[in-house]
Length: 105
Image 1 (cartoon, rainbow, N blue to C red):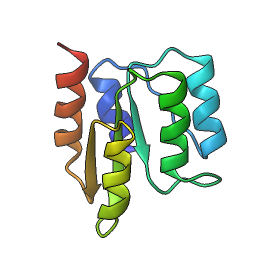
Image 2 (image 1 turned 45 degrees about the vertical axis):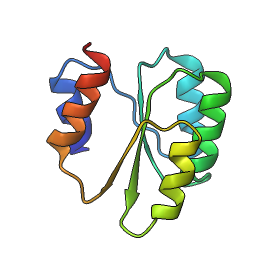
Image 3 (image 1 turned 90 degrees about the horizontal axis):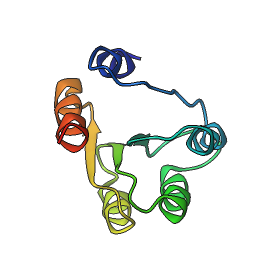
Image 4 (image 1 turned 135 degrees about the vertical axis):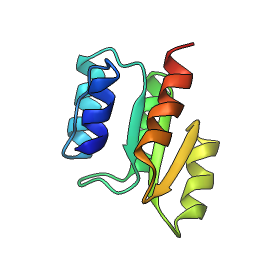
């Protein structure tokens, strides 16, 4: 929720998905400039969501968020097209700065 507030203060329209199906539905319904995706999301894992996003929108920047210790999954995510990952607990302002680098070019 705090990350959502920080992004809104930066001027971004944000959408929060409660599960994988909802996340993919938002992607279909709204033109998104980037996605912040957790590896652990109810109903579908982050890798599966990433695959589906990249199949349909190959140029969409996707940042992954993961718990420490999931580095093998991180490597898979990067090979599938994620542009960066953040290990929890992460610095919210570092995430903000990285999103700004990608979107405010």
